[in-house]
Every structure is written in structure tokens, then in C-alpha cells.
Image 1 (cartoon, one colour):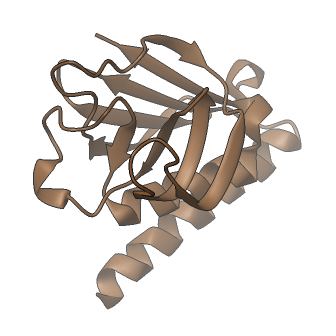
Image 2: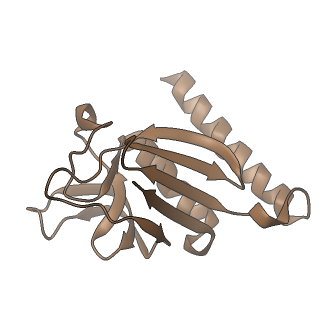
Length: 151
């Protein structure tokens, strides 16, 4: 557990230092202060890049049969540390990053379903990954964050 916490702090610190360095003119300006989360529906993974550098690859669950996950490029529209679905029996959606209407990237407690389609259309992550992603979006801001969903 201590190792996981240390690794998380190292990643967050590295991202913060990278952002600070780019803010003051070091690095490639085209990628400065950019967070990109690319979700592959076919592979059921999310690849996160920070300022053009691969940072995380996480398993996800996206829309199951009859429930689409929209494809395209989106900006976060709102963030909620805890949200309860109004459509699906008040289902908990911790660390929600909404990107299109009721669609969000959020944590799931159904960890065994990660890596295969299992949601009603949202992009679901392990609770630790969702917390990390939420913190990154807060730090970079919705304007500097892109959520790209591809087949």
C-alpha cells in the first residue's frame, strides 16, 4: 500500500513539475499544459498523456450491448467528486468527469468488469485511477483537457 501511495505521489509530482517547467518556457509549446485521455473502445483501455508524454494506461469498461459510448473528441463540461446517477437508481459515480450530457469518466466498484464493455455508456475506471484522472483534470483545467474516444 505504501509503495502504491509513493508511486502515485511521484506521478503527480512529476506531472506538476513538468507543467511548471513548460509554463516557464521549457519543452515543446505545442503540448504545454495539455492532458489527453484517449479511450479505445476495441481495446477497453484509456491512455493518458501529460504534455505529450505517455503517463498512464488503465483498463476501462465502456458501453455494453445496447448502450453506446459516444466517439469523438470532447472537453470536460463539469466535475463532481461524488455524483449519483439520476437515470440509473442513484448509482454512485465517484470522481465524475462529465464530457457530453450524462456521459462521464468515473470510478466503478465493479472492478472485475474492467477490460470489457459493461457500462450504460460511461467510461468506468478503477477507483484509484478515477481519483488520479479527476485530480489531473482539476489541475490542468477543462480547457487544457481532451477526452478522445475511438473505436
